[in-house]
Image (cartoon, rainbow, N blue to C red; front, side, top):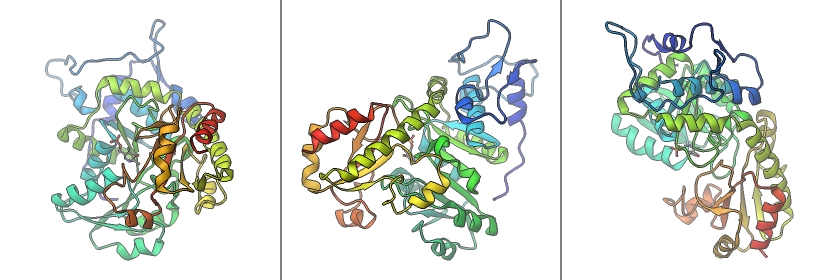
Length: 406
Ligand SMILES: *Cc1c(COP(=O)(O)O)cnc(C)c1O
């Protein structure tokens, strides 16, 4: 790990934010319980059951006090603290920070871990915005960036330079649903003293906890599964207290903190994370099984299927195969328009991880910048449709796909 500047006040602040005599819930509870209660404090009779929304940017201070300022941009106001405790418990990290978006989370993490002259080695299978951030923005900060095929363990090792500080990967991968084996990459990071950062948005902490597999820092776009209702933009970073404090410093000066209302909404969304994700896992499995038998689909991509290239590693390392899948139409790209117009329940929209089922075409969204041949080379041929399975009854979703493809 790159050494972090010595920091104070993060935990002191959280201690003072909890009223004297209050009990904080945490420790060794199961994730379904933590999603509802993690970080909650029991106060006096009359304390609201739901965390109150404290929609204030600013807070009174004692004259002459040296305590850190409570200020929304600092990520230390009441709605931030309870949520950050909960996320750290869910992910199994020492600390967590909520930012204004998933991109804000990735950007501030990179600014915290890398200095001019450092080298970032990243998987080439990353979210389009992440790729742009690395390729177009970090390089202007004097940071060297190279990409590797993440499935080639020797490729990671060969691409490490004397100034490499951070390894970055995303798993499961958007939109191909490939699942990466973290073990060889985290072993390399350990051996060479590098930080391994994992974007685990597709899995959520219910299906995968990258820290248990050797990652140092985990990032989520909370806009997706964590909030789950397509109505909040937010990002999360989980890791050691010292790394999180360094990310928080970047968040403060680059202005990437989340608004109290977004934090409050996100806390509400996370309460149902476990039931949502389990249901989405089950529904996606049922739909994927049906889709493999349905003649309109030439291929189905879902880590829960034995035919998936990473089925074994997914079975070993994930607690659930997730709610994301993809299909390739037998009639190819010409047939997508007709199908998309016929679908009644699946909404044609980007993004993912919410209660509504969505369908999108990567050739017009995340992978628009590539040519048809370049997309095909990374496993996204034209006629490839990504499905984000929501909470509708899977039988209804299957009927919708069937009627749209006859
Ligand atoms: C959506 C997404 C992001 C970016 O998150 P925002 O909240 O939209 O900024 C990053 N990584 C992955 C894997 C995503 O799906």
